[in-house]
Image (cartoon, rainbow, N blue to C red; front, top):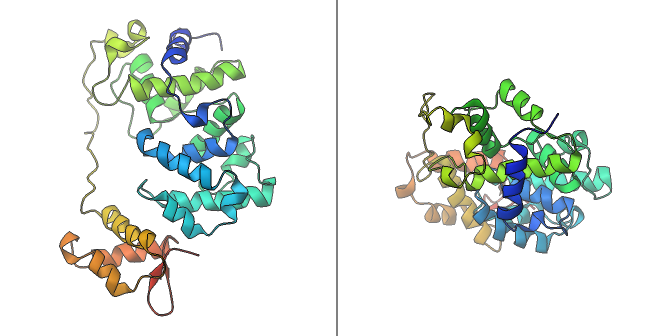
Length: 296
């Protein structure tokens, strides 16, 4: 497509204000980019950075991770949340060794075929690791386009066909520029065009923003509710995994109960329900004696 008015100011802003993240540096590896994208799903970059650095130091290649036990991936995941991502990364590493000689492929179809890799992650790796021309749309990009182009404060709760069409239409023709546009528009959403308290005075496209031109109308869609955490099943699952990560061997069930006592539960069945879901998800193994451990 011809250059869009948003391109030049956003790219110029990114050249000055981009964060120095190791998975964006010249010495980045496709594996490092893939790990960063999986870790950053629903997790702030400030929490991802130390976890990513520890992970890459221990497992600098897919083969290194695939050779280790899946339980070690869960242990290293620590408090990043949504620990099934650790298992999917371990499975993806094994698939990379089996199908691609231990290398991360550049083709989006091959990337999407990896365990735990969806359309967004495949596009992001293709763009950020290999400089491919593709359409990368995350929550930050959706919010930037909703405000600057559509004129609404927030995008719809889930990605719509219209959003996908708009994002695709804005991808520059040149592959290298397209890859930079993808990360630049994402960075703008992360640092300036934020969900809460956007820094509109610092925005490089303030004069082009349809939402500002309309008077910054308040969101009139479904209420946006923050996610509670304390006391939820996710919270209890995290407590259980924390006990197992800290243990040097299997943990007797009674010891686990002592570490996740009744007074942290919302209902009497919550501990059993959460433990059952962890087993079903492959995050916890139950041994013959009834003790619990991370998968080996």
